[in-house]
Length: 390
Image: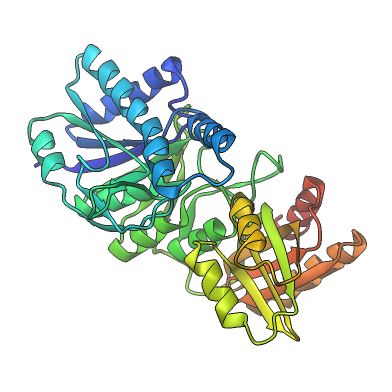
């Protein structure tokens, strides 16, 4: 069989019929090079956001299973439209939902993990020289219920399929032509990175940069699948995420500013830390940056989980006085930065000059991260970037 290439297109790439034509032409170019093509697509534009909004107009805390049934429809619209277009253009294509493509997951609705992929149907269609278009972000569990993989999960679908199919490459196409030293929409002087290691990209994703789903990077690293990020709308060279790295040296790869964080402080918890923590986990809250001391528990959650937290504070955790606030986290990521005290010195000096209050910070081999007590403007990010990345 000819080489298999997996290509993924995000929501902004397939947002309307004009953009679908651009996507179709890119797929056709790859197909003409005698490749077997598997395409993964997201829902069009803001479809998923709109579906979530509509669901919350019906219920403040919609059932997770039913949300998966609802949200999975967005990707199904995208795959059908793209298949219709490619067939009209004279290139055989077939759309497959996550379950038709053999994507089997656990039972964790809204944030399911892929257990395995049974690619028999995909391989059959590829043998017939069809372009196979798979719905990203979704699968099926052992109860035959639809599951979704969490926001950004189409990236994970693509890399997981690349691993299962032993694909030659996995391309992630979006409206940005690669990975930058910071968000180019926030800082105009951001620089594109030609290469990153899996570890560096994983830190960038986990700190909230909306570039790649962090789980897709874990799969890429596990199965040694090079991930290439490119723009749908130009032919510029993208960024390559792989295992290659310099042997030594300090290089700042990215500065991430994450404003989508809720800082939570619970008091008078007594010796109930384990019980409280188990309650948070059982309700699928993504708890991070935990501090437990002097009758107080402090942690962060993503802002999208605030409704879940509020519900718990009104029911199972109502006996514990709790405050929460929207904060900013700034993270500096790169190989060996722990060993360069100049980086931390510059960062702390700037925070002092801006009169910002630090809640806490952490230092690892490849990351310095600081939680600030309030949301801060993008000009602070730009100043830090200009001081540390020349």
